Length: 274
View 1 (cartoon, rainbow, N blue to C red):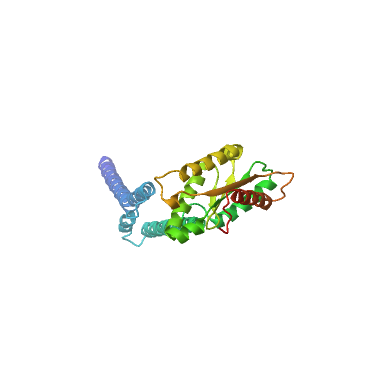
View 2: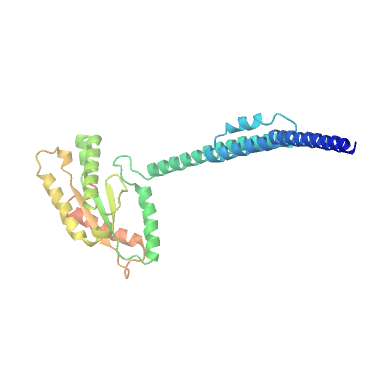
């Protein structure tokens, strides 16, 4: 009888143990499916978004939010955060693009404001800005620069005889010659028939050679029968180099250059009133 009781007891214990094992397995399966698997899928979705920055992953995350438990709440918050980040990034990109467009437009407007419409080179506004820059550089110790003044002769005569369009042709032709002659210096059109070159670098060092080359080119044009009368331009060039011991400002250099140009104009019998 004791053996029978022992066998029954052992059988009952084994049955209970089996039931417990099955219950624990079922519980673990339930926990895995209900929590761990969902957390793993949520983690994988977040990792995918972090790698690809694809906001459509929020839809997949929302599908995990099909309950009222903490994981569903977490998934909804993650999906909302991803969508909010996506909207923020779009807004940031749009703002960046608008700022870039605004800067580019400002740069274009600035270029137009400093550009001479007829010749395409820098205008009087740009020249005034350059003078302010030169004044600052003088204070910082700049010693090697000069100013060359170039004035087109007989523009009024060309306009009256051949027309203003031909006068514009003459201005543009002189502009090209000035830019080629002073290729290493900024050139400006500061008036109807006046140009200025801020002499720098090798142009400053070789100014006498450049002036001679400039005058030779004008002489060639004067005898070139293939050119129209208004294309045979005449111009007076005068320059002055900065002298630290005598020039207290850029204006002093400009005045000396202007005086030299006017002297040259008188020598050519082409004063501005003609």
